[in-house]
Image (tube, rainbow, N blue to C red; front, top):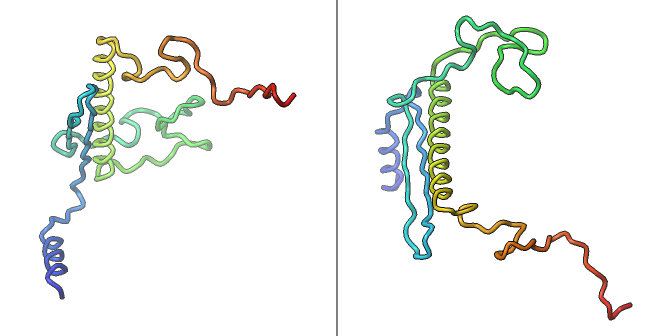
Length: 154
């Protein structure tokens, strides 16, 4: 066995291999809005059992399954032909769902903060120009606009 293979096997052997520890690491990198090149602002978050309680997968206790309204994608406990068997609660999947939900909430919070800061500074669309207007506010040409025939061929 070559030394690199032996070293990598030792590293794998020393890792704790538990199936009950799940986490989500979320890294948000926000580029600078100035004209001077700078390193982006980075926000790192780790969501695990220390800051996220396992999510309830099925219906809360005492809630009777009911047919959802059209377009409702939330869990209702009901199938087209009657109630579903309640899902197993707890475990690593409930923990993982909770971590994912917390990461999404943190992302939403950060994006809302950025939008509010831009709004208060008077910046529209993150400093980007509207796609259907020119800088002077006049309408821009559409890409799918019909071309006029050339006059020299008529």
